[in-house]
Amino acid sequence: MCSFMIKDKNKDYVKEILYALLKKYYERIVKYGQIKTTKRIQLKVTELYRDYAKYNADLYLKMQVNDAAQKLKKMQYIEVDYLLYSEDIIKIYLIDDMIPDMEDYLENHYGIAARYYLVQELRRLIKDYQGKGHLTSFYCDKLNAFIERSTAEIDIKKEHEILQMLAFIQDNDRDLYVREVSMLVYGTSKYFEEYRYDGICNIVREAAGGELEPHELNNEILREYHISNVEQEICIKGDYTIELNDYILETKHFQGGISLSSKDISAVKSIIAKTQNILTIENKTAFYRFDHKDYSTMYLGGYANRHQTAFLKKLYADNPLLNYFHFGDIDVGGFLIHQHLSDVTKIRFQLFCMGVKELNTSEYRNCLVKLTDHDMERIGVLKTNPEYKEVIEEMLRRKVKLEQEIICCTIV
Image (cartoon, rainbow, N blue to C red):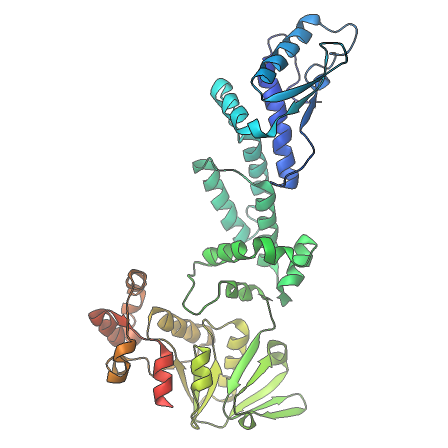
């Protein structure tokens, strides 16, 4: 029984019919989203006046219902199904194409916001997830702000699916592939990638307060929550002796380097580097190109993930007296990656070919790139760090930056 059913003869049936039909429409959106369906929204006349079809029905109330239905029919908001050879109504049908007009009419004449039901449903959803974790709380705050400042269309199904996934991600402590996560949350393997993947990555990244750096893929943020598209690998090259259980791996025999699965990192008993220098390299082209007998290298690919961090910590524990260097782009992103690397590993990585000398080398003059407005905004956080002070001042003086690939092809 509808909560707005007639209690007395002062009810406005035009309002009641519009509200009842739109409420059913909103309920369908909550359940199925914006998916088009052939099933029409309908309202039984007895939902408006329970005794409408009874022999002892109040004729005045019946007339009120009939007049309201006739008015809305003339406005082309509804269609009416009548009893054969009678003016008695059986059902009232919503005309979907007229929904925006009906919403405007309801709001302009009765002060009932068109989004009222969806807003209430969204508030209930927010209440269910608020305070349950850092990701869901962050997104719930955004939804609350959205409700207050926007009149845009609300998609309850979409928001529910986003909150479901964020709740799973924030609590996950297992290494999982994206399609496994999709099965666990949505019950199908491809749904996450096809409909929610990029949006979720954006939300998680925003919640973490991190910006997408050059050469960094948006989905890499999910690795922080043990979720990846493919098996994560540790790419190394040079002269390492790695002991895994009962097997000894000598990497010097692999000229192009090797990749270790992240699953194997926990099985590593020791990592001994036979060179005096260890070099992490930001970009893959530079990793492929760099080949120096005094250096053993590791491909970083951007911000160090937890598997790379674990490998480097183990490497340092077994080789604390070696020299550790990092080689990346001479730009804001390159220095931030170096800073992050030193912070998460607790290893003192020296900068390799990332200084004033490289910026002033005549061979690279034609490869210098102008700093963008975005660079200028972000560079401030680095100016106070003594390690970057000299090179940052030179970058600002000349308003330039430099990618590591051009440097790498001239130093090997």
